[in-house]
Length: 259
Length: 325
Image (tube, rainbow over all chains, first blue to last red; front, side, top):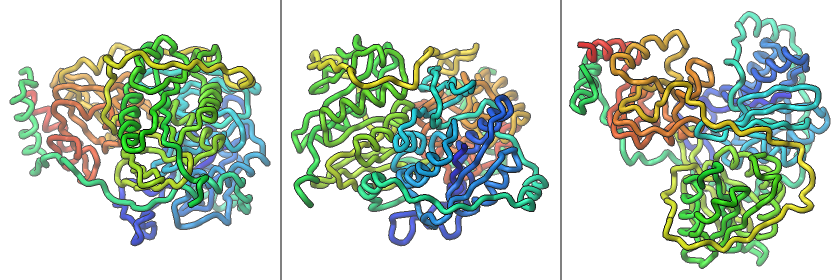
């Protein structure tokens, strides 16, 4: 099972909403969290090597149908959209995990994959929280995965080039940093085919697990603001030739150009 | 607010080590905790799993809870989470500080559910207002800051490394160490097999005077050719941000940032790198930073000395020519 999440496209200008406690979500573009795309790829690779069935699951979020159909076009077997969830606002990760936990428990997949983090995980990351609610082993920053029988061999990056290899008895929840190959591309024609075939299952989201209420209620965003830029680069302008000349001069003045 | 909602003044820092050294972020958390505890008079405590020989370098903490058990002799997310949850429940601090490292990401959510306590991640600023913890978090890739109020007797904050100052203090005396046993913790479904140390793969980007670094903006592996030509003209190794190594366009030893290498060359040339916090963590101390990105609001320009929004595909061939001239 792969859990997918939509995120505001960070290339766009993000403005705080009028009350300053969320971003203005009305006119921005949403895209799939890039790490979730890695998680999907790793699931598809695992399917190819071990014959697993891949189910993609997302909450009903802006432009999510496209993402789920793309996953079907890439080779996912089932796509589920959970409806009746908060719409048009930031969904705390505790709430997301609390909604997904009963659903995961009911379907009881061997392995749950999701992106290691998202840019709006203000209250924590999904893999660890979901692992907590379900009392399942979990691991973040996963860059290697091999599944055999009911055992996963997992490689986690520890930072500064170190990594750890471990063995986890399934079921488990993994936060994927990078799949073993670059995420595949689904041609538009295949996505269209998937859309025409339908096959997107819409299910009512289960009631969140109770204990989530406590933690969600206690984290309150008081203010959202753009960071004050204490320093900023001196911008070099002009045509590419002029800018290149200026950069070469700067490097020469530091004695960094050998010739 | 009821009596039960008053937070204890004690702060517990989850210390990190790599087997041979205590990791710097531990001391950053220490100084953030000291600042917070200054007025309240709370104690600043540390919990560390494994690394018994390193406990001596934690003398600046008021007390160290050392989990010394075969279960934590190698990193295992499950054993570490159980061990730290055990210590946290036992010590019952008001606030737990961890980081957004792999260990921190593994621990924070599970601890938040098990303790239970609210969690704030990506923290770059910390303060207290009365009984409330006020944390400032960097979200949306550093584009926005969120000021978060936590009104709870317990809280967990996961700090971004490099956001707080703090150095090891070798003059600090020997710490008050309490060894914690893990009896009754139960079996683990996760077992560590091996820890792999960095593989430099022939490239050492940490020793170079000048680095030519490339990010997502390069678009494809084939496009790397123009960057390679520039790097060759400058006699510089190629470096990269995470998306480039994740895509397999360059191998892991080229990666700069939190999960890659920390570099400090005399000049760092960044092409098509937007400057996610994890990348900036690995290169912001370079002597000279020149950045090229078509987005004028890219965070990389906040740490760069010189910047340009000229398209890298137009700029790089021209620059190679200028260097070769």
